[in-house]
Image 1 (tube, rainbow, N blue to C red):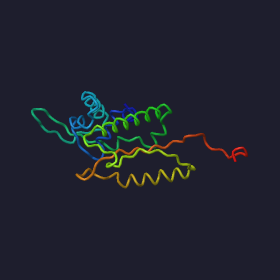
Image 2 (image 1 turned 60 degrees about the vertical axis):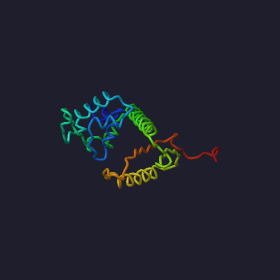
Image 3 (image 1 turned 30 degrees about the vertical axis):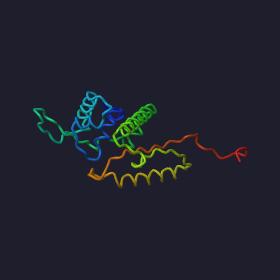
Image 4 (image 1 turned 60 degrees about the horizontal axis):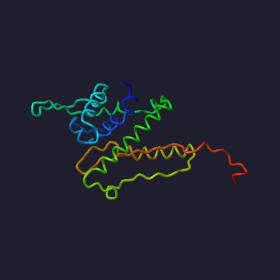
Length: 185
């Protein structure tokens, strides 16, 4: 299975998110972090990601007669880069967007189900807005956001840090603009 096929699946994408930031986890820990996904499903998709080389075993420990394996995400393999994105068909983009939205919905619901969930105190945000941007301005905004994200992308998990799912989405909402004619003035 190619990288697109691996990552454009909601459960596998949630596993990738759960493993990001250099975390090591067992499959049991992944199951606990994805309580709305059946355990057999998590185990099956972890197997797919291991076989594809996106997850690697970093440690093994015997626990009550069973070998428990600790996995780490291969960050270099778990990405759809610009080159790969350029090869995606419109249907691939539709599928990818659907998977991303399914992950957002599942993760947000899982957050709301946690004891003590407090969207205000946790600074939860999901606002949408429209910006009128030229192609150059859009490129600037994307570059500025990328710089903000990359400044924190290397943060390791610590006791005072919580992981946050961030999902910027950009797409035009209308046809390309044309020079205004006299009827539009």
